[in-house]
Image 1 (cartoon, helix red, strand yellow):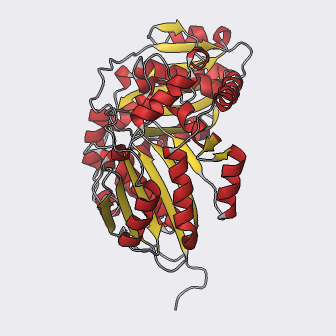
Image 2 (cartoon, one colour):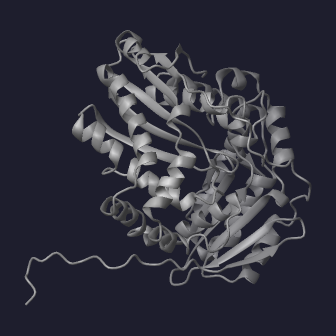
Image 3 (spheres, rainbow, N blue to C red):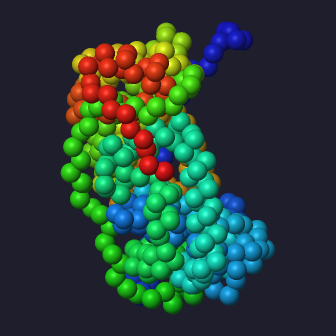
Length: 450
């Protein structure tokens, strides 16, 4: 007889069968992807431009994001208010996001309004007005936002960290850029960036819904067919020469009761063959609440509310880092603990029970990422941005399931390098500087640029 309160055993992780992607290409070079999603009268459309903050020109960090911000300030015959109202009349809104490797424009709503939504989206990307008064207002808003962020310990740490890792490379600054670059940028710079970077040959339109490719291609032709075919500036593809910087970079924040920490180094791109092993390694090390570093700093030491590690996979290079905030007098000890955990995952096989729990955390709920049209569109955006094969998501669960302890240790040896790690501390130098010097690394006082 089954006991009433016996805990049920979990079943196998649900495998993913990502829907087939049907493809077409317009004469002007725009790629069109259609993914069938039956059962609900909803369609999600995303235009992926393979240009992002990684394409910022060296003298003007933040230009890509500024240009993206200007697109919906007016387009075609509509100003910003009329444009927002037009999308609202269709029961949707336009979302624009500018990341390191891509700019996306997304809408989601009733499928019968898809042609009208695509026509509005086409106005935004093909016929933005890019007016001087809109430019001045958006730039001032961004300058004010930078002033706010310059008082945030989290943002200070992030800026100091990526600057140390990537230097002059376009990955080495925040999306907003800097005050000096915003003060120097002109409307003509934004217009030139839009003209040189935004082209149909550099774009993919992803549509997910209860709709066939022929119909999607027809809507796309009517909306985007007038987009002038031109050769866009090529995106960066080669990994930059990025030497390690194993210093302690201390940003003095007098009176701060806590220290914000970043510990890590440059990581591999999304295309790395070690992707699945690294995702599993991260789940063991610091990717979840029960991971090693969080247990050590939060539960054993009691010096933080939470600590996490992550791999930020980008097109040509990524980052690996541990992020946490600890009480000021525990700063050096926490840094030492993090570095020791980096070493331990390199030197020891992960026990089977711990490895199994990490893999389960990655695979058990994975299927939930592919339930709606919007989720499927976001997944397809990853494929388009990084040039991944169509079966990428189908292979995730079985590949993670087959990861062994030796795979994790090999990945750690190759991609976790504590000796090369840059350490960023945002905290009260009078409290933590001397103890940081005792770690045995050069301590440099720095001020991140805002």
